[in-house]
Image 1 (cartoon, rainbow, N blue to C red):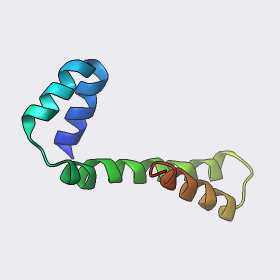
Image 2 (cartoon, one colour):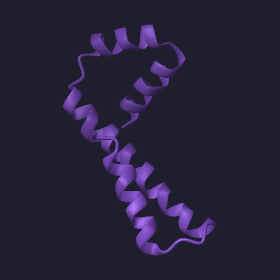
Image 3 (tube, rainbow, N blue to C red):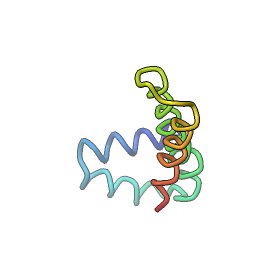
Image 4 (cartoon, rainbow, N blue to C red):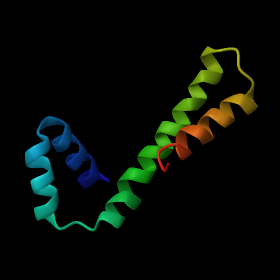
Length: 75
């Protein structure tokens, strides 16, 4: 996960150098997705539950938002 976050930060700060470093690192893309990207999607989906506390929404509606938030990254 740490290596994934390092790559993300580097892509944000300097995209050209970031992509070069990722290609030179030789990291397995499937492993990076499994360890870093999918948990990040999960965190984004969990944050959808914050709407339950700040807006007048039912639990089912918030659960739907969380599912949509998680699935939209794969479409």
